[in-house]
Image (cartoon, rainbow, N blue to C red; front, side):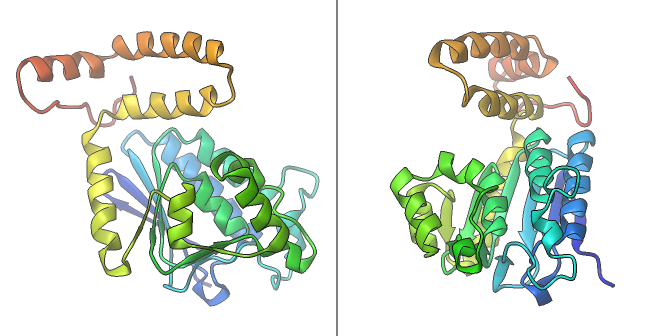
Length: 261
């Protein structure tokens, strides 16, 4: 049996590839377990600075829960614990490294949730994004935790109630993805994004991701207090001192590799 998730290190980037193309990369319990483990690995490995989430095949990024799987109901059920997809979302949020989505096929249901859970997302300009759950007797409950924050209310309500998909251009316009790119140019653009992330300060990115996650649920005044605390912590890091020195000396900064600060 092939692995449901392929894990590949490309320098300081960890590539995660959903590997069930014969099932449209549908989510089953084995895949959610593998994703949780992979994001926990990325979070704990100081040599990993960026995570890229993509999928095998070129037609479907992820079709959502695997309704044909023998244990398909378990993808929806907490089964005495936490819902499997919720565990993936929590692991993605707990991973303080930037997560970049590379979407080369349609993303539906829980697959759309995976896209929304990425920090940055770039897609081929011919893919679609949808919430077809109402057509099979359920509703996009878990993924709403992200989509209600990312999409305009009327647009998401329409998607959830009618089950109609968004085109790639509409997804970009709504802010669901950063950019919809001709398929032939997608990897080149993704390479530029990953290279830029790797050139930026790793501790600043980790603490910045944490801050943005926390501050979005705060009041304005709470946000200012928290931001003040975080910038003070950042300014005291070795990384910040190196950044200031590099600026003064008119050179590129030299970030420490694999060292927690």
